[in-house]
Image (cartoon, rainbow, N blue to C red; front, side, top):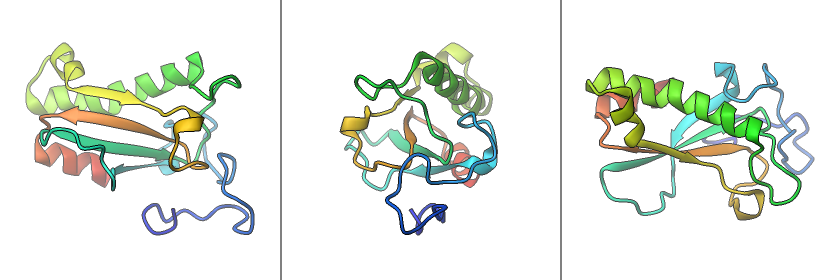
Length: 141
């Protein structure tokens, strides 16, 4: 957390939770200062043409109380962000239609019980056959 994200919790003496960080917007992925885009340090072993990106957010992502899955509103917020940040730029940079770009991008957020890194909310983004220049652009923002 401190090495890769350079984020310090409000109270470093307390266990890290989704509410540990100061954020600029209460809506996840709305303010660029509240999230970081990084390649996954431990990708799941997908084909070589698939890049596994993590988008970490200081702003908590709402989940339901039953399974810890994203709420319908959180799902909409994540889908809008993925469309704006990844699908639209992939379409533009690779000369694809939006539909073709959508076929190359997918996302998921692990249920709370499945998360290996708890306390710092994040979404997994999988992109297939992405130009290296565009990948570098996403990781630099």
